[in-house]
Image (cartoon, rainbow, N blue to C red):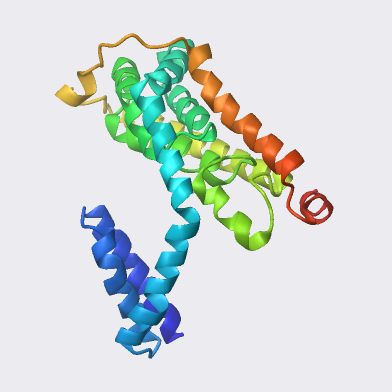
Length: 266
């Protein structure tokens, strides 16, 4: 009981310090030692014989995921491909469906493998423009981006290449498409309930007379560059999904997954 309490306190403090802008690399060992102290373990042996070897093993296994994902996201950002896709979706749906347009823009990009943080910065200018045109309070823009980028396409929908869906493969002997039925149902529940809540808050705020608010310089700034065609910009996203599907279902299928994973999920 005391050990579990120590873990919860340490995680809470780590999240708090991270959101306050402090270095996670610096505070992670400190709060790991705090959790060890709650468990009755000695600080120095815990740090040298437990924390450091586990950290080295984690970096060794998952560093390629972080590196390749960051490079792919940066290429999509610098080439303007991410902005092209976001702009095409938002222009298609228009201001009448501003919240839905932003959610779908983020969802398409994250499901195609673009880093969550790249998606947030790529979609923000278009989201701010749409919200301003529709007079939707801008404080709803962060949760709208979060719904599309940080929820159902991050770790619920089958096949998402985000690292949150990749890391469990090693421990459960599955692939990115594990539990397709339950994952799809869970993703739909998150999407529908999230959209309902955002639309409910929009109507509530507008009924109170709240609009977009003061227009700042950040929301009005736009990058002056020639964006690629949305169809061309979508090729890398589609390629990631197709290559992942072929590698995991045809070339390197996990042992026993077709027998246990798919049938269990049905």
